[in-house]
Every structure is written in structure tokens, then in C-alpha cells.
Image (cartoon, rainbow, N blue to C red; front, side, top):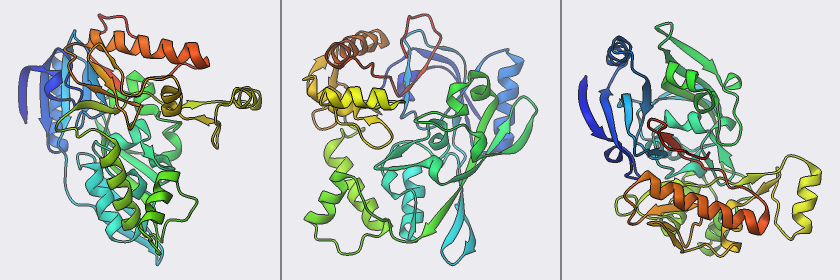
Length: 346
């Protein structure tokens, strides 16, 4: 178990912002994880579980607690249910895209559209990650966690995770977020080809490449290429992936009102946040060192910002522009890490 002191949060996260974390402990197994929690509890410090840092933004104030960095890796296990269905269990510190590649190459469908989403396997249920019509809640069976309060390992069924759009019990309840450290996830997948209808950009790829058989591996390759063309290279440009969320309307009256304004509303009452930003004239514009990505307006790239304060100012101005034009507030997707000395909006 490695313990580091006074580590800049920006070194641990892809947005590359944030003050120092008091301690960072990297863990590779359950024994080290228990030691890390024991270390934090003896010092009466809060704990924050961190994977690859792809959806985390550090505050300027830093974090006067213990970041436990998840490096719990290993092999993917497979339990065949019948000829066309199997359950796969993956360790939480494994890169999510590596897991998706593994099951897609075996011909199993259910997660291939989430290819190239940055982060670890353990982060997938936290935010209920998804893309191109798939999300992890559709296939998740259970999550194995270390319960730091009771010092036991237990299994939480998918139906007890309270999944909604980009939310679960692991990121909506601060007490549970600190109490539960995800060790592995189990998903149930079908050995079959994905079925249309597909998202427009995915269907356009299939048509332009004259693909006759759409397999999980084909969708994975298509999504990977589409994302590579649209999104900034994280090795070259700092970002946290999609910064703003889509808007979801909850009543027929809200949907009708939006459609009367000429706003496209998708299945489930979804309004594309990217469409709102595009129609607000925001693509390619820069605010306080953050650029709204031309080909993916939900992405806010850090091109020259030095502080979380810069991000707060940029977020406030962007939200105000969309709010004034359409009357909708864009919610933030990434989680903020750090002591709340600054005034923040979520």
C-alpha cells in the first residue's frame, strides 16, 4: 500500500484542476483497502474513492482527507447461463473499455455502445454511465462492495442501486459514497447481434461502410471511431468528458411546451443538451480558459484555465446563455472533489 501526502488533485484527474489532497493511498486488493480505511478512520479524515479521475473535478481548496485510488485489477470471469446468455464479473479497477472490448470480441451485446467511455469498471454504476442508447443499469445484475462501516464485503443488487439518468446511490448519498467501495460488478449479456434502431451517427457509419452484419465488435469499432473524430484526445487536451447533461422532461405538458417552441424531444422526454448549446451559438466559444468543443458541445475542454474558480465562472455564463434562450438549466455531470470553501452550483 502506497501512501502519498499533499498530492495535487489535478495530477489525478483528467480536467487537471484542483488543490492538494492531504493523503492519496493506492490499493490493489481488499487487504490494502481495509488498511486504507483504517488509516483514514484513525486520523478522523473523510474518504473519497477514485478510479481514473475521468469524471472528477478538483476544487481549488483541495481535499483535507484521504483519496483511495482504485488499482484493484484482475481477470474477467464468465458464468454461462445458457447458450445465448452469460454473466460476467469484472474487477472495479479494470479499465471499462478493456472490459467492453473483452465481451464484445466474444460476441456478447449490451455494453458495446459504451466503448471508449473513459474510466474504470467501478465507476460505471456510480454514475450509471451510458452512450448511444445503452447504459450500465440495463445489464447490471449486482455490485460487490466493501462496506467500511461494518467492515464486511457484501453484494448490492442492481434494483437496490436506485438508478436514474447519471445517478445511483453511490453518487447521490454522500454517506453511502464514503461507506461503500466498489470491488467488482456483474452484468448479464446476450450472445447476439445488436438490433436497430441505432443512433443516427451510428447508423450513418453502418451505411457509409456498407456493413451487412452488425455485430457487437462492429458497433464497438464504429463507436470508437465516431468518438475519436468528435472528442478531444485526453492525452493532449484536458477535459472531463461530457460536462453538461441532457435535459429530461417529466410530464406531457412539459414535452408539448418544448415541441411548441420547436425543440426536438426524444424518447423518454429527452432534450439534447448538445442541441441546446449548439442552438445557443456556443460551439467553439471559449469562456475563462474553457472551450466548448466544436464537434461535441457538451464537452468543456480546459485549454488554458488554471483554477476551479475559472470553471465556476465559465459554467455560470454558459448556463445563463442557455437559460435565457430556452428556459432550461443545464446540470453538471462531473463530480467535484474538494473541501467546499467555494460557492458551487450543481
